[in-house]
Image 1 (cartoon, rainbow over the protein chains, first blue to last red):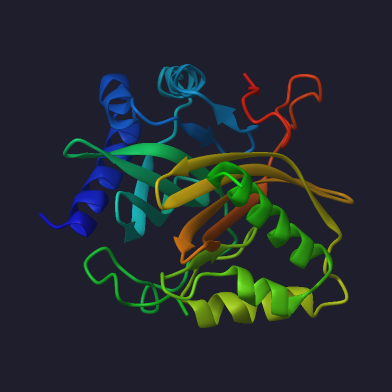
Image 2 (tube, helix red, strand yellow; image 1 turned 90 degrees about the horizontal axis):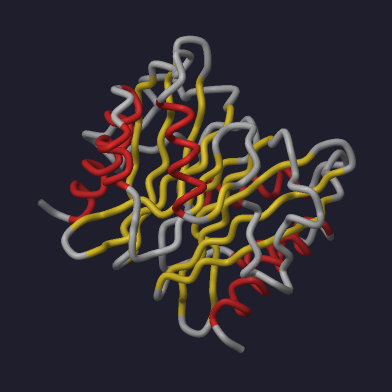
Amino acid sequence: MDDQTAVLTANQAFYDAFGHRDLAAMEALWAREHPVACIHPGWPALFDRDAVMQSWRRILGSSGSPAIRCAHARAFVLGEVAFVVCYELLADARLVATNIFAREGSAWLLVQHQAGPTAALAQREEAPSTQDPSRRLH
Amino acid sequence: MDDQTAVLTANQAFYDAFGHRDLAAMEALWAREHPVACIHPGWPALFDRDAVMQSWRRILGSSGSPAIRCAHARAFVLGEVAFVVCYELLADARLVATNIFAREGSAWLLVQHQAGPTAALAQREEAPSTQDPSRRLH
């Protein structure tokens, strides 16, 4: 599996863990050797693994935890670090996210997640897809 | 200058260019060898340098371009890539941002910027400062 595919797979695993409220999977997806940070929509920035994991325990343990689906993910691999830009589709909201990954051993693990509201998802016929990351929103 | 200081300096230069509506400085701050992306608040994600620079021409050329100040920047250096988490203080809004930098030659250049609204800035006495990046929000 090439790095770009591996990063997109790690990114999808993040949204699978989120959608399934799988805290153990979520914890396994975040870096242990690198420092981490996380910006949930509307929250202040969280720093350090304990604070980030505590936030996921709250979110995934809540009955109000949203169903979420990732769309139009694009990965940018920069050596040992990569970032993904993607949309997060919820029942009543549409967010856009940046997820940063760092390589630890053979795994790509999250070091930063920021999601925030977006007014528009590009029309499907103009939007890039996971299958065709070379296509452009603009 | 160590890498963390250099990255924070590049981050501040980005906000200086933004605040001064200095398009030439802004263009010089974005990567040329690496692909770039940008998520302005509420906008769809922009990909490729031309689209990102066009967005800055629109924003910096507008009479409504906001006064902006960066606060509580923290840099995370991961080899040849780094990211900064910081707050953006505007007259009537408070945003939180992730700025990703990659090294090109001796410079740290932007490859991704995402800013979005945040409900809260940590109280000043609890918040990290640029001068003391080891302090934590939590």
